[in-house]
Image (tube, rainbow over all chains, first blue to last red; front, side):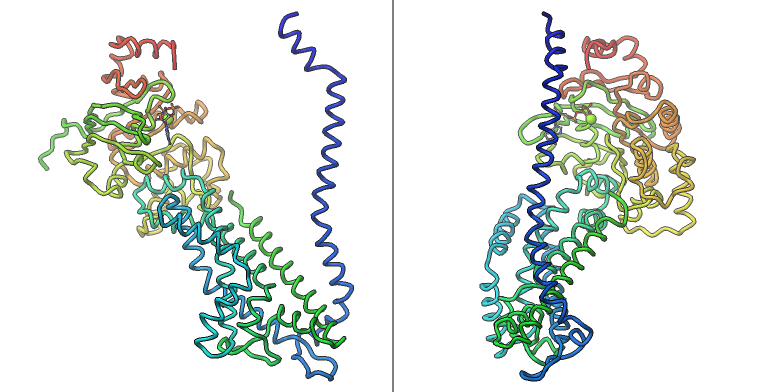
Length: 292
Length: 256
Ligand SMILES: Nc1ncnc2c1ncn2[C@@H]1O[C@H](COP(=O)(O)OP(=O)(O)OP(=O)(O)O)[C@@H](O)[C@H]1O
Ligand SMILES: [Mg+2]
């Protein structure tokens, strides 16, 4: 039997082919099933939040300030505004640093400094949020002598640096070096290559990283406990204590009052909806604006 | 200016290039006359790309890339001039097309100006775009969609876009790395015509695997083998009476 005949026989064996088709279909079903398990926790969380929280969400809840204990009604407008301010300031403080760091790691990957930055960044990423909270407390709250939204932003900013930095580095590293060379071959100085070619080409990935970082820190509670601290009043002054959604959830959920429990559920649902919204935004942003 | 036009424009003296410790091209010596087209030929992996990347000093940008020896242009040692200046005089079209994905076709053509922050009046930039794209045999295909992204074009169209982008910078020397390997016969002959026509103002070093193409457009040919320059001289002579056995074998299709 020649080799070609032999190979033809084993390659076209009907029984083998049928078996492989069955195997293929089976493994397809199995993989789909196992991966859909990932969705289960999310669905359960959403379900509980909807069941318990939907009744507390209405316009008053969103637009009003909290009422003192004992009075019914009241909302969490100050916490919503506080969350927005604290997270926004955190991003303003950290994003420039993180993006520059990510650019540095992607464009000068082998330098000694890069090694150090990459190592520190990985450690920072693994640092418990409560420790970062203490750090901000020592660094900002103690010298200032009181709690402040700003110190909360510092804590959240430190937390988000590793995420944005990694996202930037990974995105830029995936940009083919041919593009950098195309620009360099026209006599473009390297800093302009980075600014005008590398960053614009990777912009989607960077912005996506920032948005995901924002969702990550918008739910953080521990670093805010002894920094932003929380406040029952409307406050837009970053130098003073400020409320935020996770703090309100924490305070209301651990209170003895049923009505506050309900408000905690409502605030939780609101927070999840916001996180969901930002994620959608990131997805739309990544899929739009053409290009490759 | 006292320089005579018979003087060679470009001289390579003992040029060697390395990737880390590995010597890729070895002691290359040749000179290129003004307004000449030189083909660089040789089997795959023999160092053609590396050689032309040394000329505009792109080789030293590759990780582990170093070079020794001299590259003299117009009497000036290019190793002593800032790479930015070198590369504005010496344009390059890469083996694989690499248009900027964030830019439109129009912007890709004038990318050299945009990226360098050189301001040019609208009217002139329109002229540069139309002129460069026409020369690169792409104008008719894209003139109605200049605002589309450059990466929407086919591979061969992208290659011509990259040729246009290099032409837009008015280089004195143009390095072409297999510029027609992804093109159909019609576009290929347009590019060949362009090369011949460009000779009036530009000196061209062109890597090609296409023997007929080298015969059609180039004045001189450099034949490389395993990093060495085996033979250099007039294309016509080399193709009719090759001096080296390896050249003869390559030209008759025995290897490569
Ligand atoms: N980035 C790199 N790092 C290490 N070695 C490399 C690198 N690029 C190329 N080489 C090696 O250098 C040698 C010459 O490569 P080069 O690209 O110059 O060949 P070439 O003549 O252009 O080949 P082709 O006709 O296939 O394009 C090859 O042996 C290759 O393995
Ligand atoms: Mg090559």
